[in-house]
Length: 46
Image 1 (cartoon, rainbow, N blue to C red):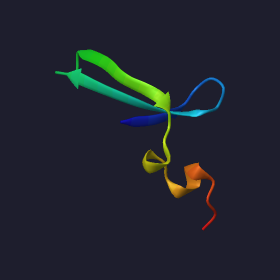
Image 2: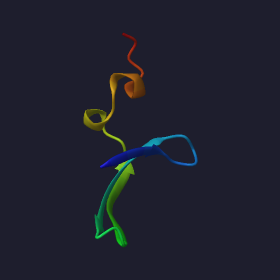
Image 3: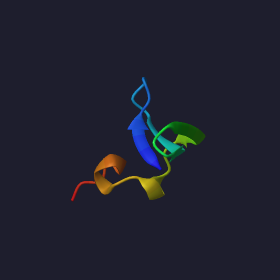
């Protein structure tokens, strides 16, 4: 799972898999859920 910004700035979670470093397949993409974000990414101040 990789977290990264969309062009709009919304954080996305992208599920992907690669095979032998050649194929790269995205099998899941949606707005990032809290369980995949760090406290900083969630906007929590510590």
